[in-house]
Length: 319
Ligand code: 13P
Ligand code: SF4
Image 1: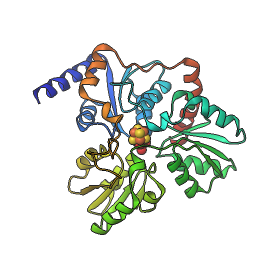
Image 2 (image 1 turned 90 degrees about the horizontal axis):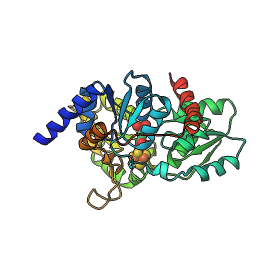
Image 3 (image 1 turned 45 degrees about the horizontal axis):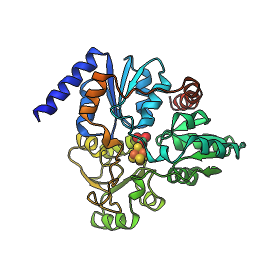
Image 4 (image 1 turned 180 degrees about the horizontal axis):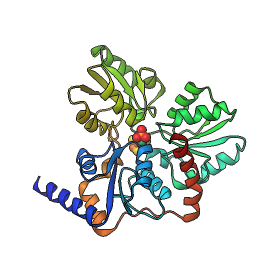
């Protein structure tokens, strides 16, 4: 415990000394989230993380999340130094969409507007017309559909299918999935709901179709938190990474939060309701990257310039 508080103190002093700010995602360890708030940083969903990093005056961003989040921060602020505690913290969506295969997919469908999820590499974003996150995907797809555009969507097939259902847009889907959300199970969720008939079901749209169908609220991590804070219900069943419960408990201490059921349990299933890559972020790793200037995000400048167009477009659309 003493070692932990020493690490926290050392991080605070390095952040100040180096004019650096800590930006974290809701899925990382609660201690990191608390430290981000305490030091004037931010804990957010992936859209808000991108916007915060771009607008904050600090010259150095410490991103606690997964690699695509650090890359988005760097693409939007190439003049800033972006460090991450562990550059191996990736995402199954990013891994499942290699840029060369994606290029071929796009080349085969030149009549389609290319819309990619934030959870992709810089090289994939460089080929896209739009980047979206879960909090603005529906609005952007709706906008494109209204303009009569056909969409090529990558990489999350569940989110793609959900957007297609909601907007009626003509969408060609890449077959990627999130290993964490893919584990949520509809039958078990129905059984749980019977035990808690008053509970509201909150589902992240990276979850499978039958799980989304049972939801009272489908939305990004920020939207799910808002639903708990503003909802009149007492109980909530939460189908996303359990890291989010930390912030929900802080903002809605009197409410009961129940984890949605997954295929296995935490003893048998490594990715059950907790992203193994988000879990690679630790206090020691943050201190290490600050003291050694390690884990720096570096992106080829022409890829970065190309990728910035689709991200800036999203930020402008959602401003
Ligand atoms: P949000 O944009 O909703 O925070 O989602 C990011 C993510 O990786 C979910 O798995
Ligand atoms: Fe990627 Fe899923 Fe982890 Fe989010 S939870 S970073 S989508 S693997």
